[in-house]
Amino acid sequence: ELEEQIYMKQPEGFEVQEKEDHVCLLKKSLYGLKQSPRQWYKRFDTFMLENGYCRCEHDSCVYYKRLADKSFIYLLL
Image (cartoon, rainbow, N blue to C red):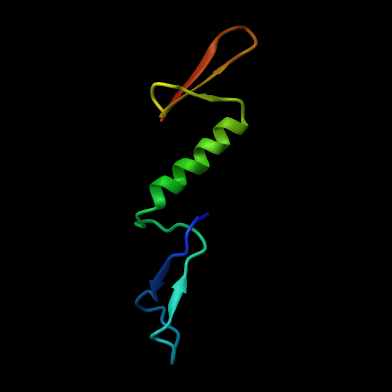
């Protein structure tokens, strides 16, 4: 999901006839969009935290979870 309003030209081959000068309002992030990596990471981070993982203080790409038998699961992104 995007946090800001982003508009784009109609893709070539998908223009609406008689409305070629109109633009599209994006509702979701697209591949190649500058905001895509950040939006993907925020969604991934939320998912991991909701599933009991903790983010490492020293490296935000490392998640860990302590299991009942005192062992750990590490996920390196």
